[in-house]
Length: 561
Image (cartoon, rainbow, N blue to C red; front, side, top):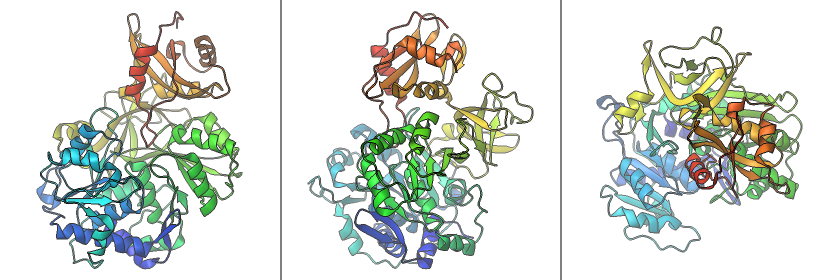
């Protein structure tokens, strides 16, 4: 089977062409229509001279021989059409965060060497401010919106571009080595472009080999899944500019499902999400941990939407607290299947937790996929689950993935070598997440090493503390950070948002609550109250903001560990 994302989508569109691929408000896009519009966009790229310039065999892991097309867009059909259109043309779509200011926008467009940009009109002034510094840009495609921004000089309107080009493509030598590039969120520094072969990303995270399903090895097997419609009808609220958003779409398409978008796609609107569930009888809902679950829960309390069609909840990319999950499930039908995924831009899907409401035990444990392991603290060998000391006081390892993993980081040989080491003759991706085995063999994910607090020589993983804090009824949301302390080196500080209708808890209240579940050195010594927790559009917490806010507002506690 030739694994190429455009070819796969075309095969499926030819098989189930009349089925809805995308529903967005009153708009419906069949598989046939979405594929046809994507091919028109591909021909526009080819006419502009964009595509594959050098084949993979002539390149080093951190290099790309294909032209890059930046997608500076909100969610919508245009994002998916432009992405697939780039793949059809053997170019590579590149995700751009629509929250970026001018300097950040310039960095990604320059770092990716983007030759084309597809952008919503609302972003035209920001793009205009940097385009003169980007001489490699050949094609600007503007998607109209309600902003009233005029067409940039030299740009072309999206629909005009499609209308001017045929849906019939010339023969192209598609290859499984053609690239998929995903820019990271930059949570630990500047965004980095993760370079995947399309075959690798298909099997790692885009549905080629999901737990519980056989690995897709043939066109007929792929088409059988597409005919089955097992992709369901998920509402996708996560931004497509992040993997959590467009990976859900690709997974849905590869199983013949229908992606449903909320009416409001410029920001996360929980009422818009529930209206989409109710109106279109969605059977699945994707969460970005508590960042989505909390406002969705608040919306259900304000207005009782019909949620009877929901069968599956999928949470990824951020922590879903047990208390929040349990309360949300009370508003959903009995027996809703809950899937919590752990993964990374650099690794794909690494671990999963399957639970139903009746089986839920509140244990944050995950089952590693067969291609993921824990390395020892020195990153020299794989931890044996049968011999590793379990629990947080045992062997804390590094989460690593082998097999279908990326080639490297675009233009960064040093970071490529650091993140993708060869250990025992096997190449791994080691992205920086720490974890340990539980006594039952599952894995407890502790979070990023870069967000770990070192207090008095003890390592404290913030997600563990945050989970306990979120079980306090007066704490609506929280981030935990370390701030400088003359005695402890770093002081554990909780930045909290108070639950509406509750009085703000005192530090003593919080310490008493945490003392039942956490060792003394992990319990916050400082408490800071904020109006809201700052997160990215995809729900990822902004720890840099939290640390700065804590430094500006925290007062040391006299409490001792």
